[in-house]
Length: 115
Length: 110
View 1: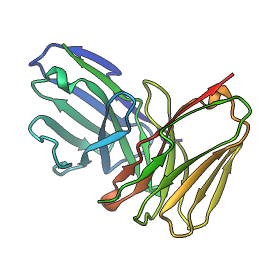
View 2: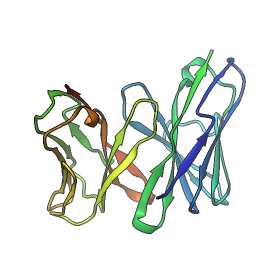
View 3: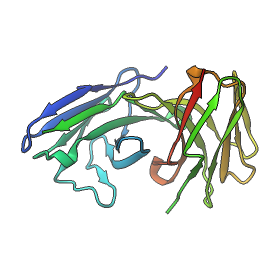
């Protein structure tokens, strides 16, 4: 099966610092990855589409300078939350699009707590 | 804007009962997926339905895609405590994006 990993699984940081979250497709190549944010007891909200070798596409209302996305290879996308504030605390989930079967496979998520 | 309305949003039933979760939209989707999510984990794909009228079974779970590909349902027979979780439907919108429903938080009481 297709496996997507995320690192770290949880992170606590001080307000004002930057945090990088990695998303890797372990056994397939993904030209497209997606980053979601999930609030407690809520559904997933798409933040941006990460495209290998090109700029990410952000959803309306998501600050691209706040949430930096880099998709440097076909198996790795990173999300950097810059100058994090307590309101950025959330569960961040990535998914990788596997072309075969047009299916997105999700990572296990990263819980971010900004103090 | 494509929207998926999922209902009910919360459901708590006794072990052994049957239940159905609905996912409705005014938009047509080329495919629709159902996920299950445990607390603190990412969603896990249960099934993808592609063809209008399609029915797929996964043990005690039955998934149906509406004829017009605007709605879907998940039926669980003889629910068990292990079925407890957040169930999400998601339709494939444009540019490979998934449009998610609000989710159904299911609790099966022993």
